[in-house]
Length: 499
Image 1: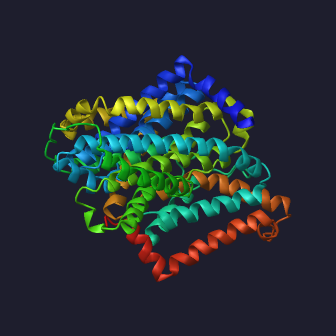
Image 2 (image 1 turned 90 degrees about the vertical axis):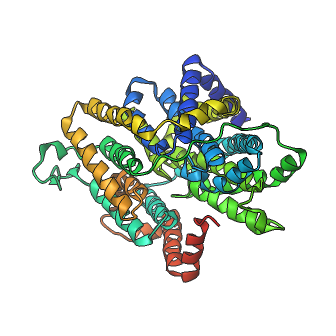
């Protein structure tokens, strides 16, 4: 009954006119940036963070959440119609989705993708509602030692599950931790790594790093790419055949279950879920050779998995205050902008915000069905807009947004610097996500490390004598040990292959 009462409270909050409006705006923007290749939810959320200053915390989070799960819907449209994944999570959808489009079944592929995403979003939102209260109650028992160990586990998980080289991921995480330490030491009052620059005394802001690494860098990267061929506007019937519908049921259920589980993992989320779900369906298929040639299972499973993974990734952020991916780091930044301390206390101190956000996901998923299927023709036309016509307005929005936060030209310059660094990291094969997670968690790790050592009179053994802390550190150690094993490294790389 407690969950029912909480959901009634959440629906009451989500169904207000203001929150419905921003839920729709978020879902619409998410679909738009999912359709337009190269922009992405992280860059969009980074650009819109300054706007959240003028919104209520609940409306701000509802809009940002809509952008994230809306992008999972929109990314499948271009993947199916023109073989260009609007989002990285839709890469595997393009393999069979575009093959179906070439076979005249584009409408059916779009419908299965949308319905599978809707089902997965609905189920995973229910899981959030069920799992969050007990997790938050457990987290309330955490002390400084437990939180420090939990953050260690989060960073280790992000490194293990990041794409590309493990060494690159470790280096980016360490760089993020170092950037998070820039500024004045709150305990001693001494400046750290400011190099005599007065503007760095308060530390490096979240906005310059987020906008630079994900928005400005993405603009530079995408300007290098050639404009692809325009998609065909022939979509056909949106109604799947009985055989296609029957063949989709199992993959949708398996994709939802797998995505819901992987979404909670640090660094996992929607991307890992979609690749893993596609690999699973291919292994379970009686005839794996059908995949890549228009198998409906290759659309249904990854699209269900990426939407489920996108929504369950909210669980560690909402209950523990730990971002599992860059998007959740943006959500955490939005909470901090409004002066709300992330963590298990949000559920008790801000119940309307907590349950309103969860209930809004159901409302948003319903809106996305209307936005995606009937309006698919409009989204197809948007794909034809050359990127060179879009980037000036995106860059202007970034510059105005980051300057408007503190009226600081220095922060606008930092944004440009981090944009160049983000582009260089892309060329070197270094994923920026671990850097952002390290930057967010670094100051919190330092604070909890110091608190734990003060309470234990400087004895570091406290991290091993507290049972929860010890378990978390052991899990982190096991993950690090697995990375060393050749079989695990091979399997990790194979998950991200378009096989």
